[in-house]
Length: 250
Length: 250
Image (cartoon, rainbow over all chains, first blue to last red; front, side):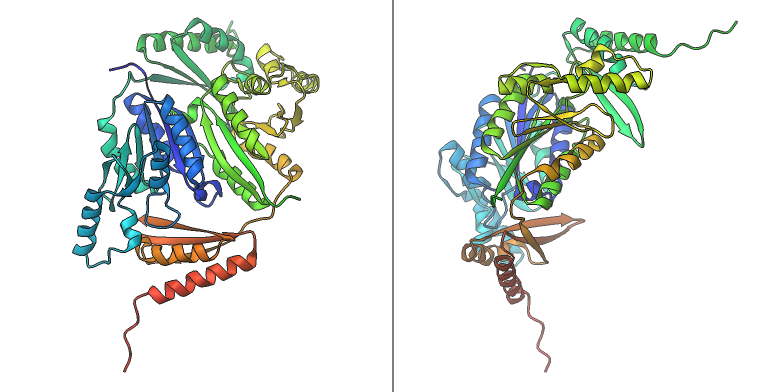
């Protein structure tokens, strides 16, 4: 098991870029990957455009262990993900026999026409392997290190549930969140010194603002729980030191 | 006014990629740009890493009218956006005199120390212009066609409100949404023909799934309202034709 496993995501869809649909898949993938110790390094949202999809997939698959895509694998003319991925890999795209038979049987059993549009969902790049779709049958697919999944959140989540257990995973990041009422401008200097003294950790500082009140959340992350605990203790000591002192009782 | 104005977005922050924070800025920017006729073409979420930020900004500013970034402009060590943007443009990053004076005065008026950490918020690439921050004073900035704004949604939204009226805008896309209980596999063939016959429109088909029920939303978009109306009428006629016929009453 290598210690660091990285991933990238490509969200495919004009509807996200127009604001019509608000993405719910980025946060879900991020949570799932973090939970198993895979670092999500980059996400791209691209339009329903073959070259845009291929460029994103090719840049990201070259520098990450895995790439996950969502969207564009349905039966309509704007579902061009399979063709675009095939283009990215430089392989033909055609009917996958197993997917074709699966869909043909599925629709026959329900007395629904296996239309040319529905047949489109059996199109895959040559050499792709299925990702099961327990919700609506039409499979996603994997080619190389690229996992191509549906954009509808319920279907994406179901597909991801079958994919995640098959992935190589890294050492999980452990993390500790330390809230503080002190503003970032007060703690920023000493916090930077703590980061410098604790190179095995990643210390993030996140300003929060709600209903006119500001506060700060400090998050210490590390692949080593000892390193995390040591840095978190230093942060807590620093915060205690900076808090306005209680009046002395005489 | 050119007809097509394009934009890209760079969301900067480890906290989005770890799943800890769920992004709310992509959808807001998409909505705002669509409302004024600017096409959001691509979004990238990148980590708190100078080279990752610079690569994304340089790729996107070269091929879009505007680039908008969110995140990483606060006072702590992990706020590296100003330095990364300066690196991307190949210019020095230092204290901006106007921003420095503004912040100095702001903190002096409240009796708060103008710490080194707070001074970091006055750092900008040489040649940058301010974007006002009515919420928490520390300004964002513009350099070239890149607009650098805060990640906290309330501050990002306030900054964007001051930026949007200054932008060149294109011809707005008008759109009509046509819901249908017919599945995509049934309408996919004829819908593709309508798309081919109406090249001035972009016709999207979006499968919806909730509580075990599937339906389809068809969205017709165009910069011409006549072209949109003609394609939408064709879609409606097609759907009516495909709906199961009512039993004949004798």
